[in-house]
Length: 348
Image 1 (tube, rainbow, N blue to C red):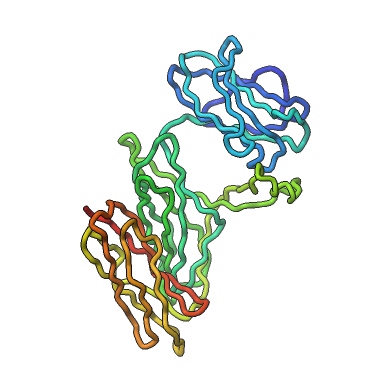
Image 2: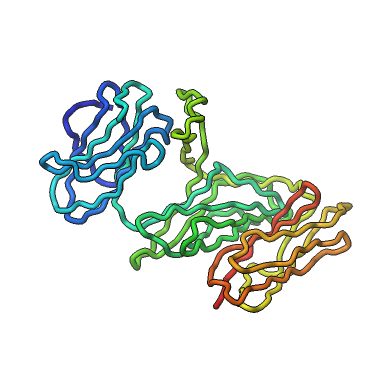
């Protein structure tokens, strides 16, 4: 990281710039912008384990401050800004505490403020069992006003594995999905790819999910994370592996359909079936996760003598239209198993 009081030009956008406030607690960058051109400046310090209290300023050609931010995300700064006119501007980043040294490192991300999204999971790997199902929560970060549907799918799945997929609808920022493996599938690990697809400004946009893990920077005292201004940082993983292991659960679940439609004022039914390991006994308590607003379901227990049971859903007359996934989960004592996700549509 080269330090200077002189302003450095911003390279092509998007860009991520890294540096250290080694001896000087400010850095300046020049930026040319067209009229109404919109940008996002994301200044990371505490979020990546640094000790800085970061601030951002945008100055016009005369040196007058025209936009600024401090403490948007804890002690870190984030600024969305549109140029009032075409011209040259200066972006200044600083450590407001004026501390310098090796622990005062930073990252500055500059992107255009176009409607967009990302999908992610807070895990570096996925594990599912043969003849079993694993629940995976996928989160969507929507930016710059995007609020459309995001369709989820998986690529490069090994033979015998399936992904429920799903649709993250308007106003939603996450969905529970499932991975399932057939009985007898090879026990192995393989990299997979989950993608989200949306239409933004009449253009198809595809974003691949990134896995991320929390970690402890070696240079950071763990006691620092007791301070609310610090967040234990995440780092993105290069690959997302999916491992198939031998099933340890005493039973497996499946549903009679992978989709269900709820009509306001009416009831809907779904059959749940089980496959028990030889000799396994006990009643299976059934619960439904992710029910849409104003949809209810009666509690059900699948008796030891039963291999299937019915769930009856009731939709209130004013149930709002929505889409998503419901997850059927069964439990015997401390053992739990899910069925593959069922996509729902509340249809007016």
